Length: 83
Image (cartoon, rainbow, N blue to C red; front, side, top):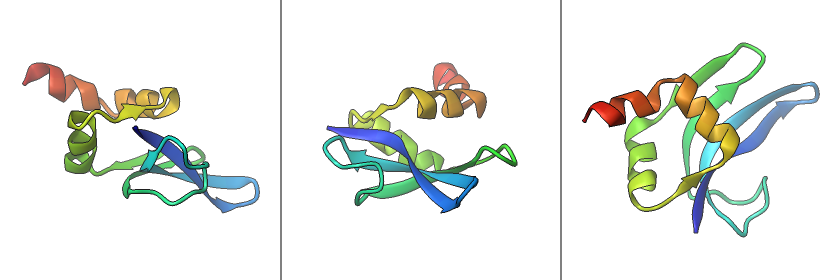
């Protein structure tokens, strides 16, 4: 099973996260299938690869709660509800 999960990057006390599609059995810093976004909680910036996220969600990937909240704040699901 594939999940959309955060992968920690950056320096001490200045964490930034990549949103990645990764196998459930992999650890947090493990090998990912594809990078699908970026999240910086300090600057509150988000960058999403929408086609890649849609592809993985259609294939049955489950976002973690934190990734789901990030996608919701970016109004990702509002576009899906309209179509």
